[in-house]
Length: 230
Image 1 (cartoon, rainbow, N blue to C red):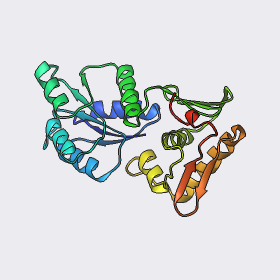
Image 2 (cartoon, rainbow, N blue to C red; image 1 turned 60 degrees about the vertical axis):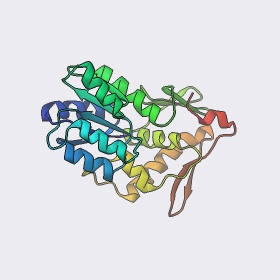
Image 3 (tube, rainbow, N blue to C red; image 1 turned 45 degrees about the vertical axis):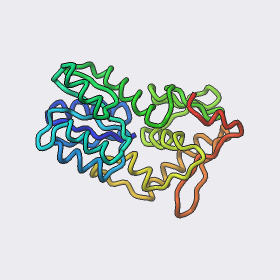
């Protein structure tokens, strides 16, 4: 999951980004509204965390421009202005959720999880695919109720593939969802991560198919109902 954090308070931004990265998210940070608008227009994100009091373009202006492009990107507003008028304005412009500063990190992370689930049409934090279970909160995976050890990168890959069961995911799409600005991740590295993940889940009959030159596909399990979030 890749998040854009638009917050002009750099100390707060660094703290939030660090917390979200520890939870397994890739996080890009911008510090003004113009940069936020340019980033969401050019990159693929799973969530925008948007402060309202940004310089150059306000959070409301960023949100208005985003929705004018018919973008369905989930947006969580952060603001020190905890007024009903500000909240209503943000929600009317197309925000999906709203948090007033100060807030607890645990609550922010819970809202992030809820919005990213909503973005892929799922309501549960536990996703099942045949004998494979993935807990989005704990970032853990089990096969036949036995835990499997996954690196942070493997967890991210599994999450993206589970969201798109039966559909082809290109290497470029994987990198878009997993990598922050400035990260150097080669196509060969993606192949290595996929190889390691494949070896760990194939014991449960879970298969990742490679379509040479195009990408990867998590094969549907026999019972199609098991391929959807619980």
